[in-house]
Length: 103
Image 1: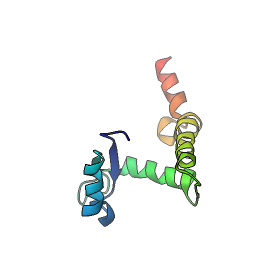
Image 2: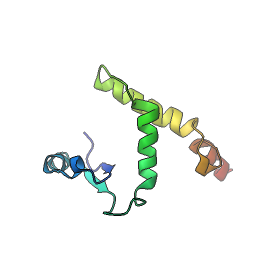
Image 3: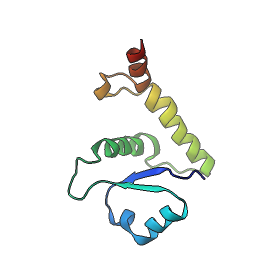
């Protein structure tokens, strides 16, 4: 299991709980949360999380952990980065946007 991975969440009680935070320490993960009372602090990450949940995993039932990992990889590396158009990037995919900036 990789160490030092940043896991971002809002300040929901489940994420602030002692049990959840103990898991972070046990697995050497880094907890990232929005600031209290600042709903815009993590707006970009919340937007990404929403897209991911709705477009990739909402309602899915995975038979194995490997199936879930494959679905996540396929969504991020194939669809989200290469095909999905992003309004903040002038309706280009991240890959097309970066290619345009390099050229």
